[in-house]
Length: 91
Image (cartoon, rainbow, N blue to C red):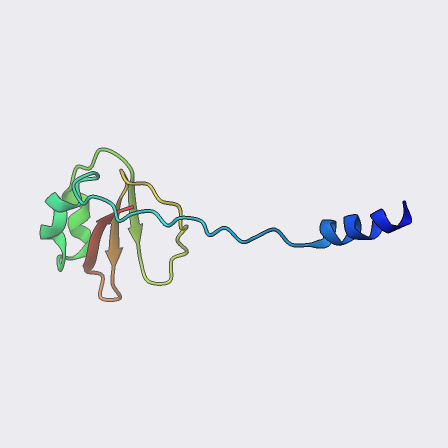
C-alpha cells in the first residue's frame, strides 16, 4: 500500500500538457463594413462624426488600452498621433 502512494503523489504533481489556444483568423473586411470605409484612411478623425455606422465601433487612439477580444462584426478605427485615421479594420 505504501508503494502505491508515491506514484499517485508524483502523478498529481505533474503538469498538464500545454495546449495552445487558437488565434482567430483575420476578419473579412466586408463583415463589419471596413472595406467601404477604407476611403477614410488619411482623413482627420473628425470625419467619423459625419459617418453613420450601425453596429459596434471602436476608436483607438495612441496610448489607449485595448482589449484583445475578437468581434468580427466590430469596426475599428485607429487614430494616429496627428489625429488622422491610420487604419480601418474588423475585429
